[in-house]
Structure formats: C-alpha cells, structure tokens
Image (cartoon, rainbow, N blue to C red; front, side, top):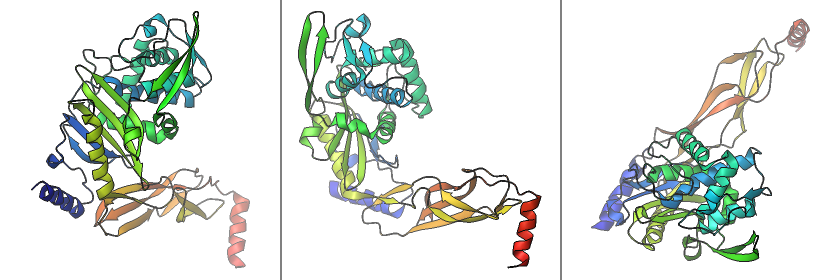
Length: 384
C-alpha cells in the first residue's frame, strides 16, 4: 500500500510540473518537521510541518556562518584576521572547543571550529568580532532572516542554545542553508572534514585540540557534503544536510527527530527519494545573445539582447515533456540606453505551464545620435 501511495504522488507530480511540492505521508519519517529542497532552484520536493516554529539548536549556526562569509566577501574581516575571545564567548555552555578568555585564534580556525565541531564559543566570538557584541550580531541575524523571507524565524543568540523566543522552521532553515551553500560553496571544504585540530594558545602555553565532525552523514553517506547538526534537550535532534549526485544537489532539513541517529537515517531517505525521482533541466546560458532590438535615435540602430540569469528547473526523471522557450522582446528602445536595461523576457514552459523566466538585457550602452551620426545613417542608406 505504501508503494502505491508513493507512485500516485509521483504521477500527480508528472501531470503538473509547475507544482512539485509533495506531502509524503508514506515516508515514515519520525521527525516532527522536515523539508527536502533542490538547491539550485529552491523548489521544495517534500515537506511536513515545514512552517512550524521549533527550537533549531545548533542549525542556528547556518545563519551565523552566512553572516561570517558575507562579512569576508564585503571586506569587513579576512580569514587571516585575529579574533580575541571575550569572557562572554568563553563562557558559552553546550558544544564548544573550550576557548579561554583573551585567547587568540584566526578567523579561518574559528570557522573550522564552528563548522566541524559546532562550537558555541567560537560562534559567539565571531559574532562579537563582526558586530561588536552578540546582541548586535543577533540583530543582523534577524535582519538577514527577514530579507530572505524567513517568516517563522526569530533568533536570540548566535549559537542555538535553547532560549525563549528563539525559533525557526524546517523551511526557513532550508532557505538560509540554500543561501549559504549557493553563494559560498567553498564552505564544503570545511563541512566535508571528518577530523582536524586547532592549537590553543593561552598563557598556559600551546595545546592541540582535536575537532571531530558532528555531521556523521559525511562519513556514512557517499553523496553527503554538509552541512550542520544541532541538538538540545528541547530541540531534540536536528540536521540541515546537503548531498550532491549527478549534477543535482538537495538540502534535507530534519527537525525534532527522536534520537541521535534517526535524523541521519531520515535525511538519507529524503536524499534517496530526491535522487531517484528528479532531475534538473537548464535553460539557455546567462549572457547568451538571443536577438536584437531596434534602437530609436541611437548611434547604433540595433542593440543585442542578452539573457540576464541562468535558469534551472526540477522535473520528474521520467517526464519526457519538451521544454518550450518563448522570447519576448520589446518593439524598440529609445537612446540613450544603458547596458543592463531590461528590454524583454525569456519564458520557459513545460506543458503550457510557466516554470521559469529571466529578463533580457541590453548588452552595452548606446548613446543618442548627433547630427553627424544622422547624416552618416542617411548616406549609408542612400548608397546601400
């Protein structure tokens, strides 16, 4: 009976490629909430209680990591910068690497501690380094969550320790996880580490501290490449996992699983379902020239139309429907015109259902024609 239910769900998917979310009662997943999302498109494949506000435990650190990488990209901090650990950060309980007050570590080593060992002390120290205080950093976390449309999330701390009014949802965790891995894929250089170490440098001298990855998926599941675990007495066992196979990448978020190993088993179930049943199609390539547009009063009579964005679509593996492309260019533009100006759209359809689109943009600036330019145009036409 269970196999029949899965087959019916898949057939419904094939009949309507524009609506791919599946509520899979048949998966026998015991976690209170879960989501399976395809990373490149952001499409949710399977979900259950995905908007319920739950304690996120250390998968909170996905947002902390996102803000750290954004700060590096913006030039606010560098991987080689020195972080001085405060008493507040050193005093964090829960999962930690036992940093001491006034201990110095590089941003690179702090990142490793957060990603591999889920270190609360390192997370708070990095928040203080970026924003001046953990409280200010939490303000940045909540602002970024709002920008990403994470409507069922509110952070109170940078590490995920249980606190009143600190919550997120499976779908929101998937959203911020996608933002992190898509924009900063280099994080997988850390998330795939099984074991490493740091050197504590304190007034007592130097000592090695071994870091072992809390995400057992990276050792037990061949396609896993991340991302973050979490557990507390109130949150139970949580995971935001990532896995990649044959050019398709999934994010599986499991929240409030009943035991330590169950969250990993259930993530694997979600991944295996995704890999077995879905594929990603690609539209035309970003910056591809798809035509030209008439320019009125310009030094040039035509302007090239380029595709602004790469677009991908997720469909059932056995769906043989043709991907239809429609190019809609404006009739003309008036000079002066700027590169990147929108001059139309490219629309992709499957079975008459729109599955994606991108703006068409002008390739380069086009100046307004002067008197000499107009005379040249007239003579060119006359002697053509």
